Amino acid sequence: MESNHITTNKLLASTIIAVLALSILSLNVPALSQDEGNGDDEEEENGEETEEEDEEEQEEAEASTEVKVEVDGNELEVEIEVESGLEDGEYEIVVDCENKPEAVEGPVLSGTLIVEDGKGEVKLEAELVTGEYSNCTLTFGEFSQEVAGFTIMAEETAAEEAEEESEVEATIVGTSSLVKVKVEFTSSSTDKESLIQEILAKVRLDEETISNALEIETEEDEELEEKLKVKVEIEDGKAEVEFEYRFVVDSTDRESIVTAIVNKL
Image 1 (cartoon, one colour):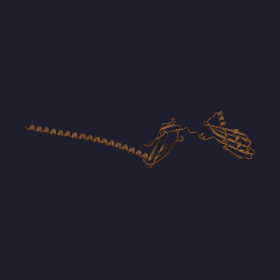
Image 2: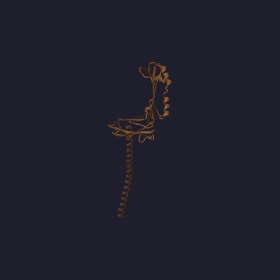
Image 3: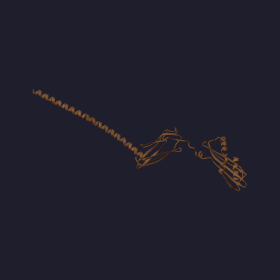
Image 4: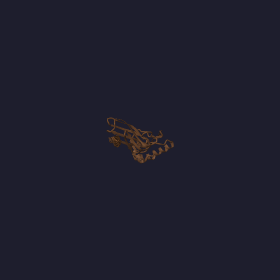
């Protein structure tokens, strides 16, 4: 009887211990899960904080950086001035476009910005080939800025830009005048017949042009003789033409000289 009582007590004690163990285990499992969840949240929060810090640094860098981009003729000009927000060092500057002429290999413009004591300044220029440029971006370091699209037109050479030059002079000698007409221009023609026709057209100056250009002086010993000189130099597919014509007019009156020149030409 007493033995059965002891056995019952042992079983009861074992049952109580098992129940307590299960209770402790069930309490610990949620606690562990909760701790693990908090760790993930902390990592996510830290990640968000890092992204926010990066964005703040980018905004700070942009706020203290002045960028100027201009297209002048066939040149692209970029000016960058940094007051703060960048670490000291060298930064590669690149301007490139998704759409650009096939002849352009690599970036449209590139250079280096040197930052010392948090400050830096640079001006870059590049001659561009003819064509359209669009979807362009300027970048250096973490900085990025879109550049408006632009078109480069074919630039004329200095000779093409220069206007046709004309000189009209008259030297009074006694009762007559020695007239000199000089015309210079550049032609894209190199064929002889085409050049002759163009010269004839260019030297037929109108009365107003002659009157405005005419300069008159007096000379006692000037030789009165007629002379025609045409000089053509062809280089790089262009013809430099110099036309000079000297002839005598039997008058010393300005109006009569102008009329005689018009008729002679």
